[in-house]
Amino acid sequence: VTSEVLDKIYKEYIGNAKNRAEVRDGLLDAVADPLFVLSAIEVARYHRDAGNPVYFYEFQHRPSQATGVVPEFVKADHTDEIAFVFGKPFLAGDV
Image 1: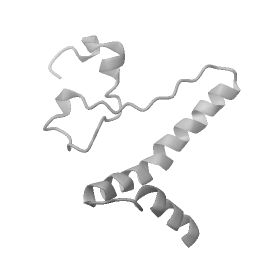
Image 2: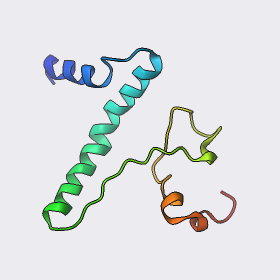
Image 3: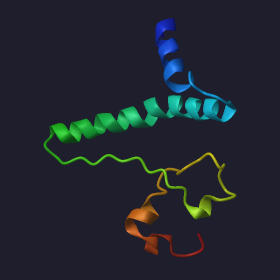
Image 4: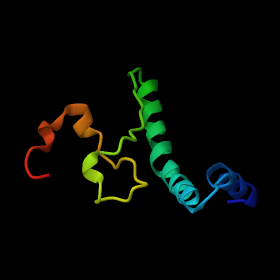
């Protein structure tokens, strides 16, 4: 990775940070984007190119049951949207 690429990454994710929390959020995005977002976009494009309809979303609603369990800066974790999309029947029992 060249210093020019690193400079662009820094400017995109951390360059405008005004405090430590914004630096943390930028670093989390810098790690998550190549691991999750880019691969999800690639798969979505394969499905689109095969002629299938594709729906892409980012779920950020923080579930009430996350309070006291995950840090406040975490909006939504993987699979948190399932209860909102399909309803609470999938959360039956002591969850």
